[in-house]
Image 1: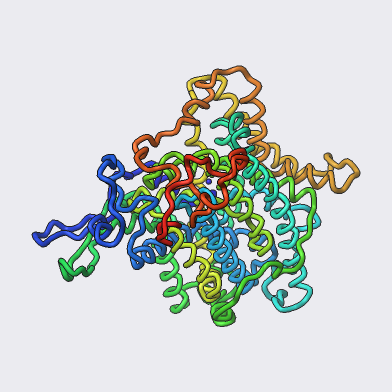
Image 2: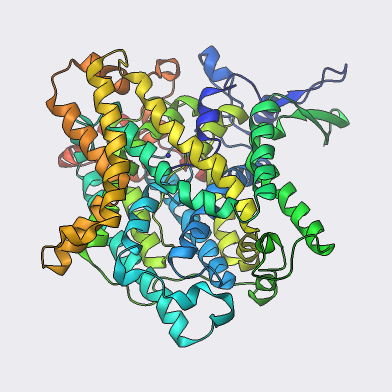
Amino acid sequence: HSSRALIAHMHRTQDRQQDWTQIDTSPAPEVTANSLKDQNAKEVPAKSSSKRNQLAYTVTDVPPWYLCILLGAQHYLTALGGIVAIPLILSKELCLQHDPLTQSHLISTIFFVSGICTLLQVTFGVRLPILQGGTFAFLTPTLSMLSLPMWKCPEWTQNASLVNATSPEFIEVWQSRIRELQGAIMVASCFQIVVGFTGLIGFLMRYIGPLTIAPTITLIALPLFETAGNDAGVHWGISVLTAFLIILFSQYLRNVPVPMLTYSKAKKCHFIKIHLFQIFPVLFGISISWILCYVLTVYDAFPSDPQRYGHRARTDVKGEVVYQAPWFRFPYPGQWGIPTISLAGVFGILAGVISSMVESVGDYHACARLSGAPPPPKHAINRGIGIEGIGCLLAGAWGTGNGTTSYSENVGALGITKVGSRMVIIAAGVLMILAGIFSKIGAIFATIPTPVIGGMFLVMFGIIAAVGISNLQFADMNSSRNIFITGFSIFSGLAIPSWVQKNSEHLETGITQLDQVILVLLTTGMFVGGFFGFLLDNTIPGTKEERGLLAWKKVSGDEFDDILEGEVYSFPFGIGHKCCTGSWLHYLPFCPTSTSRGPQTQDPCTAL
């Protein structure tokens, strides 16, 4: 899954009832997040349920400004691994393997756009505390599109000694490819905008169930095994160490609290226990391996000859990019040139768009449960999907090489931190924008040694595949019908693209554009597997319970029914009262009804 990074599934399924701040049991008065909220934010209504009381801040609460910044930074760091991974994966197919400076610009751009999309989603979209970022669902069709003969990188771009990153010829090579990506993403995003704001997402969800979603998500990650293996194989010792550390922190040490010194007026200097390993396993794993690579580079433990095994584990291979990158760089639309459009790219990206939309609907419901909000109504879901489409449009215009979607790992983080305030996510969005402008940050991440990235991929892609398979828990897997559909869809999604890549000449029709469309679709495993899953699940007889549709669509959230729906999902700044008063507006799929526009307020923070 948006796609989509290592700890998404773990956050959803483990330790949701465990608070991340366990205050020590000294005789002095305790200062908890709840007591801070009582002093600095609005009171929780007395009629709140016991589950809602477990939250330090619910979706409509406004924590103190310093807490918003700290928790916003945490969300930014939680999404960091997935956001940074996408440009690094694309760099090879964009012929940028030996141009770390441009890689850093791509990283800064995706940070910047993700921040803008997060602010749009929280303010005008579904209005839940849900972070937006790059999506792995777009990677598979993107890699298929760039594998077309016309977009394969010239041999000389794979040789570092022949690459001159400032030459017009090299610049045109990679910019022509990313412009093609931009055009495909922008056109495909229009489909998502239409589906969202017209309410068609509800119609599509009637026919898309676990047996369609499971092979689709699983096949996002499985075809990337070669990418992970190649990067890890640069130095297996470093990559295995990175994977081991991530597994150690996320699985074995996730329940081990770390004492941290803090200060409060009531208790002065005292220690609190924070489950750091559970919150930042990827960040810690990468950092330790990165530091080790630096030490081994200083002592020349890695070979300095580029042709020898292990050379790319050195930290000085890309080190000059930090000095070359400007301190500040403002990303802007069309920075790589005017986007170009081809049917092959558009149809391929559409497969990723559909997968991303369906997953996001599930994210909205999970986020509502974890943030103390009622289940999202149809108008909020429609707006959320529509705003995600606008986010993909912006990502295409800015040239991130990817789209945007809701980030599952940050949804899961809500269950750990017990802070569901959307003001925290607004703070995270602002921090992401600042990180995108401060281009030295992107440059630093571009210098991560290749085997460290490979070790992260080994774990991350495995988790994404497992998250896809986990959707089968909603269906009856004792049914031979469901076993057949699942097995056939996944196996076809691996076998057919593999054959097509090796025998594409047998599918030539003589029409270049049609050949490209067929080639991109049939080499995109998630499209092939998702198509067979959708077709067979909707044509082979089976009950809704057997297919998993009843459990799939079941929404739990009645424990939060004491919060007015309009208080959470209405438009901000009183727009619902000013602009949505006409009776005819009731028929707009994205406009709140008259009973769900929420109370008027003069407090700008609460109005958000």
